[in-house]
Image (cartoon, rainbow, N blue to C red; front, side, top):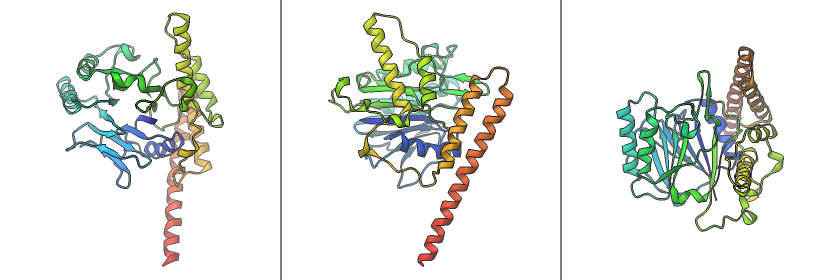
Amino acid sequence: MMRILQLNLNHCETTQDLLCDTISRLRIDVAILCEQYKNLAPPNTWLADADGQAAIWVQGGISVQERPARVHPYFTWARIGGIFFFSVYAPPRLSGIEFSALLANITEEAHGTRPLVIAGDFNAWSTKWGCRATRPRAPILLDSLALLDAVLLNTGVVPTFNGRQGSSVVDLTFVSEPLAPRVLSWTMSGSYTHSDYQAIVFEIEDAGTSTRPSTRQSCRCNARTLDADHFSAVVSGASVAPGTAEDMVSSLMDVITGRCDASMTKANPSRRREPVYWWTAEIADLRRSCLRARRLFQTSRGRQDEEAHGANYARRLLRAAIKTSKRRCWRQLRDEVDSDI
């Protein structure tokens, strides 16, 4: 079983800091990232594009079986656990010709690579994945990835981006069609990211593993980690496509399972990971405060200025607490080294 996180870091230091805790808490194996704050050096297993716009961060000592012979602008890839993962960022500034050229480079690099995951922020709008309108990039994207027999995992209409200029679904996840049945869930995580972007979490079952619900280990969740507010909000807003009673029940159970995966961590003691060195109870409380403030802002009517001020204040407190904790840990390490000399 491989657990994947996808997120646009928006070039934010605090967002990348919080990602470390999210990866540990949600037991992530592979992080598909774009607009990173900085590239990480060894011993981190970190693969990046030529421009610092896309990255893949491999966790837990998992080996990278293949990687690009040379770096490319706006995308990178790696073969991990037999699966080829592509991380992509297509900036809004790219012209239609430049966007087409980027996709041509990706499809050329991905030719003959299966199974395949292509994920990232494409800045492409389409009603097919929940946007209010379809813009020229969308058909170019779909036509290009059709050459790779890729299908879209995004479900529902929950925005992946919520900013001052509005909301949109621009973070997309595609997989090669034969891989799709092995994807157990695709859902928006309720974790606070300190970014305008939401994290996406999904799982890929090992090849040849039974998918019967009665024996699926991934359904074992740690109820003590439940984010009840997030679970209630997303389930109440879930939609099920009309069909037979059996199909509707199956679809609803898929929604509930996906929301459980995003709202709780798995009960798997063998994969327990330690929190990041600078994490404190104060930072955890401030992160929860930021999450509450963000939800109030998103649901406010006529009080957006007031709620925006509260959200910004909570963000500043969190950012300051992380920096203070890092400095304190660095001083402690330095003092310990000095005392050993």
